[in-house]
Length: 418
Ligand SMILES: NC(=O)C1=CN([C@@H]2O[C@H](COP(=O)(O)OP(=O)(O)OC[C@H]3O[C@@H](n4cnc5c(N)ncnc54)[C@H](OP(=O)(O)O)[C@@H]3O)[C@@H](O)[C@H]2O)C=CC1
Ligand SMILES: CC(C)CCC[C@@H](C)[C@H]1CC=C2C3=C(CC[C@@]21C)[C@@]1(C)CC[C@H](O)C(C)(C)[C@@H]1CC3
Image (tube, rainbow, N blue to C red; front, side, top):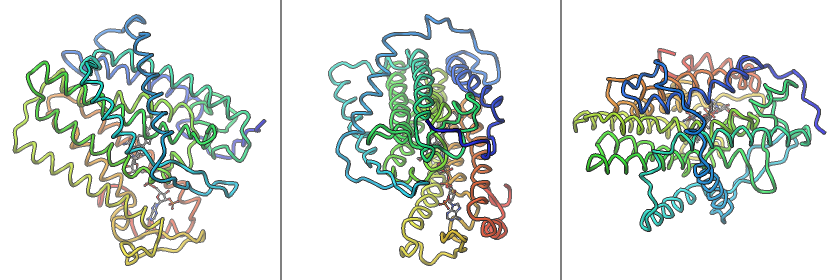
């Protein structure tokens, strides 16, 4: 039985009290958004139009559909992969292997859904059952996190994450105890991070587009843009699946409620908020404005992809001709830090690009409501908090060299602003 790692890791998210509050607040916020978006006034900060009874949240059919979805994605994960990648080195010096077949899963899902629709699968009915589906996803996330917590009780100490092992059950349940919980080749965290939630998100968007077409004769330009931008984002994440292996979620955070709920429920049901908003509150959008929004998304994507690819290429092979000319700082760990190129502009250029895209996803929804800007607001808070966590970890890893990097690149996310 694994002993807790002790309280050496500083507590995050406000400690046990913060974790307990988030356990309730996150699902409550998600249901609030789902209820408010379909109401007439659609006020982000107003009360929900009504409180749904259990009969509206619970549906055996929705649970079955949700479990079938998870089963389908799990089956696609187990299909032969074009490549098997190695993860970062673990505490015991070993490396785990991960199948790289996420994009293949996206394409196969699209084919299966297309086939389903051609034989009468009512895709347009999906928006009607979002509430019970979200309830099933939340329930699954709670039960699954409980399983992960128990599993960590019998995991070796070397398998535990740096945080999430404080000894406080609520805090540890929220943050997650085990770093890479798996059963044989099946890695739960890696699977959940990219597949059911992200692919589910674009499928929900598509269903909203189809329903809009049925209601109004054709999908609106705003709905096309939101669908297109977010499909690009999800397609890009799955195309560059290997890069997720170096994110802090995989290398640092345990797998507990925060990520299980985030991946399985929060992402598909709140990230699709703009498309949901457009179905219930159609917005006029002219071609000139649509072109400006496309340009904003293209700039955001260019920064996001440029920064992420530059770092990944550099981490894989610093002498790659695409990055060999960049200036670097040496660190005591033997690794180097980039101080020119994207990473010389601000310390988190990828966050900047991601935020610019977030803006482009909300703009097609017009300026009449704050609700479709929820993602931008939440994401800004998430990235500011994430940036602070990453800085702490980098300071611990790189010490003086990190101070030197901060001196040479003083801005965190937005040049000359923050
Ligand atoms: N849509 C969403 O909901 C979310 C999206 N994201 C996106 O996920 C992506 C990954 O984000 P995240 O995992 O937070 O962090 P990053 O990809 O920014 O990785 C941070 C790590 O990069 C390395 N690094 C930092 N500075 C340098 C440098 N100058 N030179 C070389 N390496 C450096 C360090 O690790 P090391 O030195 O060990 O390599 C550091 O820990 C981002 O694009 C972000 O926007 C993130 C969260 C949510
Ligand atoms: C519910 C809470 C408020 C917090 C949950 C956070 C999670 C929703 C996010 C944590 C890191 C994420 C990443 C992506 C999606 C959201 C979560 C899971 C990501 C897969 C999106 C696509 C990107 O291209 C990426 C870089 C692969 C992202 C990695 C981090």
